Image (cartoon, rainbow, N blue to C red; front, side, top):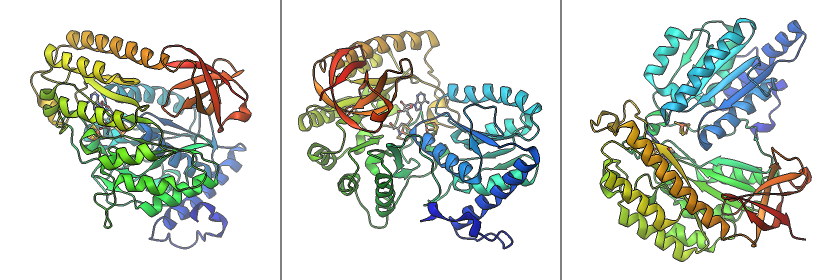
Length: 482
Ligand code: SAH
Ligand code: SF4
Ligand code: F3S
């Protein structure tokens, strides 16, 4: 197992090996030597800070960055006032980008007084040509810029940063590589994301992800199983399988396999008690998956099924490959097979050309489905996507008005859905001490509802039966039942 590799045994006088991941462990050892030397010189420990800006996949990547920086010997800091700061960026909507530009200004000021500080940027936003141009021109204080395809080379890139002072920019257009067995440092001891696939081939017309994450590629089932077995042995009880469209998992593998079959294999792994996944594209959700979910003892009764719009006309323009009726039929089929399933969704308001009638279709689907929760987004124009060149952009005021109406509807329905659970006893995975009140702990039901209850840190990572005493809209107060 590479995670248990002895860095001291790596001979740094030799040239770096060509094969991966051995090459990256060589560079981790090399970086460790540089860091130790600098620590001796400065007579203090060096520390790092990783900031995630994006989705669960982005967060999982940050755990990979953290794993490598820790192995290099940096200590983890809890703010940007650190010796190595890396921003793992997102570009799915314009405001994700704006956050990064804003915070870079602050980093620049801090770095002026801390000459040994290194600043790195990676993630989806770095795959955009205009971003790189802007960085090269006006943000020369950044030391390292890389993208989503060569993240596995992080240790090698850090070594270059520690060896020289010029800005290093290394962006790849795409990759077919999946490198296994690099270090990962989990944020939570008891739960973990697990990538099952990378990239996206769907090209929804508003979405930049296929351009910045590249083509769809699945990990081999045996690599996924091996990773989950190791996680289980390390105390993980809940896993979240990650992919932009998990329902098309396995299509491109040599020995093709379906997502449902992969789930059956994962279900057998001892120690894993809860299995979640995201995201499910409605167009590829199979009957086989519904059946596996309905029979499973471990797969959570929660499905995130992005709607995006309830208007068949807009869905066509979005290139989603389903219409309003098909979506509603799918929901009906799922609810019939798994009556207690919680459905959540993503909805975009203000897609170019969206009329009041289209919007009312969206509201209608929201009411008919009755989502337990929904993420609502204002359409954001992403350069390079087909929707960005559409002329009929919806005026801002109209979009805001629709957005507020949608949000109100979604919240009212969610509150109603949640209140139906009041008084029930449900298994809850305790995740953390409550941020506001240290006498409380916070956990999640199988259907993803949040509950706060009296408890101590010893309960973290355990699944306990909780009586849901009081519903507060979209979360509960509860109590352990002995
Ligand atoms: N692969 C997932 C979603 C990834 S992005 C899926 O297909 O469901 C997460 C969400 O961001 C999307 O579901 C969509 O609702 C939203 N989103 C993506 N591009 C957007 C854009 N240009 N403007 C506003 N919201 C967007
Ligand atoms: Fe974007 Fe569509 Fe791919 Fe999801 S499925 S990442 S929305 S292109
Ligand atoms: Fe953002 Fe990239 Fe995820 S654009 S939403 S971090 S895949």
